[in-house]
Length: 334
Image (cartoon, rainbow, N blue to C red; front, side, top):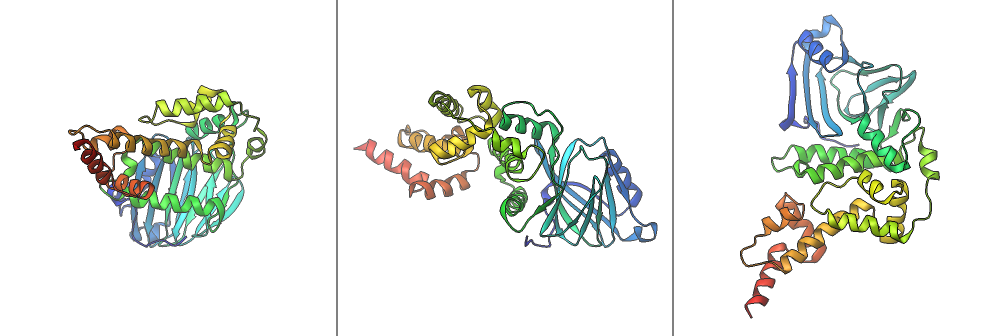
């Protein structure tokens, strides 16, 4: 996982300090125990940046030129994915040990009895924290029923291939996007899609105690179930639709919906929704009134970042939104 050495999420500063007691007290309020050698405390340079979403947050952590130990308490109720950017991370998770590096992430499940992260000197990492209610809710949607036991992930992810590489790439791209003043993740719809992408990917691709159940829960999907899902998506193009919403509408497990959408439509339900939003925007541009603007049409179709909307629109349709609009108005004038 190749990364730049510069700090991430600088637009989202949470805490900075060179004082050990101040750092310890701040982290205590966040339900962490913080330890370092008193003799090295003068080297402390704490920098904690974070962006919070409804079901997760992405954080950047750096403590300066000294090793530190961080232990989440039993009161923390989130799943912590540690992606080292620089240096080494030694993690002890429920008695299992993970040597974290730029090629290997550590995953701490809150159901484990104990957890400790030891960062090497001058190390930095991204922490992805997934809310337990949000993640377990997504698991229930995929299963089609509430889970009967606590969710427990395998404590290590290989970041050089498969889902691990995809996870690292998307989290780092999100962090870079969030450092821009016009971040696309500030849109509630985009934020919801990103959260579901990360959580669904973790549940379908990284090993945990429900992995086998998710593979077994597929069943034939009736055409009426597909139609209910499609009708719901088409009727809610402007809303942050979730997988749980589709499960409630269709009565079908999310894992089954994913499989049959891919088999029949060639895309996931959320990708279908994004495609439908672009199609809606194009149809609106082709039918627009003279007083309507591209910005108004994009916002009404669920896009709040006009520059990126224009770039992807051109890739999809071979012309910019303004070219579509000009063509419409030229035809209307004849």
